[in-house]
Length: 209
Image (cartoon, rainbow, N blue to C red; front, side):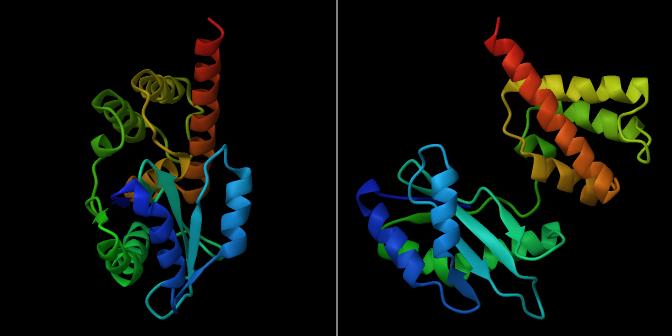
């Protein structure tokens, strides 16, 4: 989800978003301040928390400043476990309908939400998507990328992401492996960690040429 509009109104928009967070939503002032201190120069980070209920678990939603507005980089569970794709989409939709859209209209902002169902090609290049599908289809899901041929296909995926400059995100990758492809949750997160380290290595290698 992204909020786009006039830059001159962003401060007022942010203030109204904070004020409009009513139950089951609340603005997390301390969390927002902590995130801003840890960010690399980004200012105006907003974190909201939704209480759990019979329909959805408790969750935290981040609004990150981008250009003249904001975007949602991630939604995470407020307690243990993780959100399913359906829960993630439901929390996002609830925040948009209850808070973001009513506030955005008052300040001339638009709220854009991507499709609830996405293909790999929506967040990575076609070559990277093909490489990931090839790895996942052929690999032994109980051993990750430990077999030499599986490891080679896994490396091909990481290289394809690096070459394309895709912003894949380890959380999103782990969720796809686990929820869409049926990998075990722990193995999916292990692979996502390996992906992050492999990508960092390739990036550093390019910097030292």
